[in-house]
Length: 233
Ligand SMILES: N[C@@H](CCC(=O)N[C@@H](CS)C(=O)NCC(=O)O)C(=O)O
Image 1 (cartoon, helix red, strand yellow):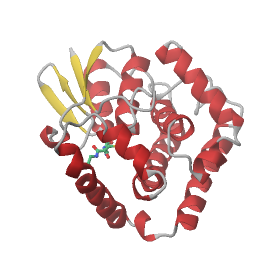
Image 2: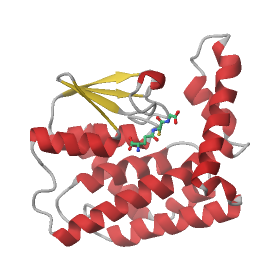
Image 3: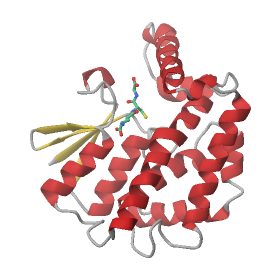
C-alpha cells in the first residue's frame, strides 16, 4: 500500500500544499490504491518538506521524485503516449508552476500582512497552547527567509503580482479551449496544474493574482473538470 504523508487538508481543498495535492491527484489519476497520513510531521520528513510517500517500505520524498518512482515501479499510466516535444512542454510548465508561481503564492499567504492572520489560523489554528503562541511566528520567519533566499521575496508586491499574472496568462493561454493541458487526455502535467490552480482560485489569500486568475474562466472550468473527474464532486 502506498502511504502519502502530507499536511492536514485546509481551505476546503484536498491540500493547501500544492505539492501534496499534486501527488494525491496523480495517485487518483493513475488509479493507484493509496491512503493519506494527514497532519504528518514535517520535521520527520526525509527532506524536511512534505509530501513524501512510503511505498511498501520504500520512502520517497519530493513530489517529482515520488511520481518518477511511481512511474518506474507501477507503470507510466498517464504519459506514455507523449511525444518528446510534449514532454518538454510538460516539464517546462511544471517548473513554471513549482519553481516560480509557487513563490508568488507563498508571498501572498505568508508575507502579506493582511493575509497572514488567515494563513496562521488555517495552518496553526488547531495547535495546542503554548505551541500556537510561538510556533506560527517561528515558521513564518523561516518561510520569509526561504522567500528571500529564492529571490522572489526581494521584489515589491507590485512586481510579484506582475510575475504571478504573467504565469497565470501563460497557463491560461496554453490551455486555451483544450480539455486538459496537453489535449484530450489528462497527463501528469494536469496533476500539477490542477493542484496549483485550485489553490490559487479556491483558497485564500485574496490577492491581485487570484483576482486576475478569476478573470480567465477557462481556468475555473478546467479545475471543475479535474475536481469532478478525480475527486467525484
Ligand atoms: N520540491 C518539493 C517542494 C515541497 C514543498 O515545498 N513543501 C512545502 C509545503 S508546500 C513544505 O513542506 N514546507 C515546509 C518547510 O519548508 O518547512 C516537492 O516537489 O515536493
